[in-house]
Length: 559
Ligand code: ARG
Image (tube, rainbow, N blue to C red; front, side):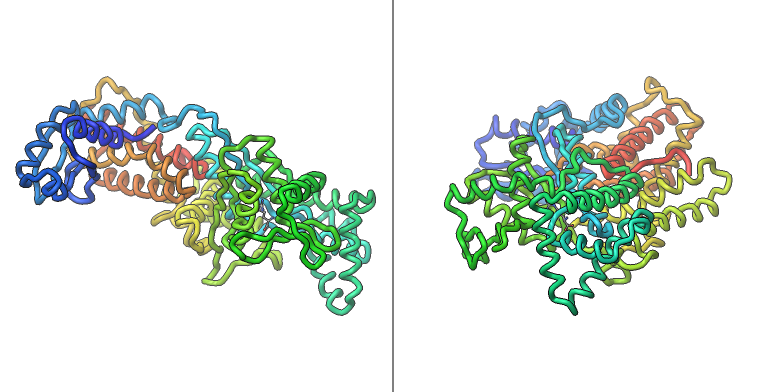
């Protein structure tokens, strides 16, 4: 579905092509002025061998035939089109009134998109980078679902790799089951750190770790049991994070899942004559002479890339995807470039996209949630909720469900702070800033919604009383035009894989609503005026709620 203005553009363009022999038409939504569309005419002088006023008259006579064109005006080389505001407004607002939050939702298109997101590493803390991946991936999932795609959300857990060899050795030397049970990730991580300190002094430990991992890879029962345990307790801890964020996945098949699918990849590479030996290891030499991609180490162990290749082929077989997205930080750029190159050399024509993103900074420096309790991510998120609660206590001490509200505000603030800027940029993690009720924040949007709910609470909408002619006034019409953009905004967000497109739009809509709110008495005593106002604010509400949902945020009726 495209928005109304885009539809009209298509129709006007067609109308011109039907009547004139011209190469192209640029129909733009002017940034300044009050017309709905404008066509720069200069380019046609040469093409048509006519003067500007003549060209204008020719265009005008054609355009005015369209049912929604009110008038066509010539200003400074531009042809300005004014639409029938009453008809346009009626059509847009009635659609939103009828469709509510499903405005802009598209029917199933039978296309499948797999999104690999979050994907933290077992036995390691959930980093702010994983938080970004989780939030961006979840939003992309919701956006693509709205556009009619079947979306498969995959948590490609980092549950395999040589580090598990170190973990096994460390656990057998110093592990304490009770401590691990009480605080799995911290304890396992501490073991890992301790192992590396010890291995600095005692080289033989490194070999032990390699041997242990190889045993694990070969399916040794004791090591497998231990690995299963590490995975389970870690996943449990991750689950609390997903609960807070209200994020879920269709698959938790991590790297380990592909162990028995590795031979197939290696064999296929061999069959296609892509695998070559390099100092005992097996590699794929790239066509562009960038460093080769390591597939199998000299001791036979496979690597991150090998597992990603296996995963990709598996996803293709299982889901027959049209598109595969990987929501992973900028630092893995090379890895995904190589992955793309190798599958292409294998003869696959996959549509793969690395959805990269920037760092999380705190006071300008890379934020770390690895060390110490006060910087752990669940602690940080709880802090956001706590601070939101304090603000609510101050602003609205008699509110019901304060804890529930604080959770929506606090978590929403964190999510919005992540999604409001282009994902490739670094983001600043400043709890106080993101929790402000003014400015470009989650709470600001939530507050706009609450404001509308309180208006609608004391009123019932009666659409039969609406006077659509009132919408001709710029104060209404400009807002209606913004509402109309929503379906195209969602479309653009999907095309560029950027939830920030939706986030920025919601800020604009909120700002325009708040200006409207300050200027117009919505609860007018005149029934007709009041109903006309109510239909507009109800539409704004529906779009704001739906937009927030697409970002993975909840909304409130009071706060
Ligand atoms: N576990 C990896 C990490 O934390 C991210 C995995 C991303 N997904 C993938 N298919 N490689 O760095």
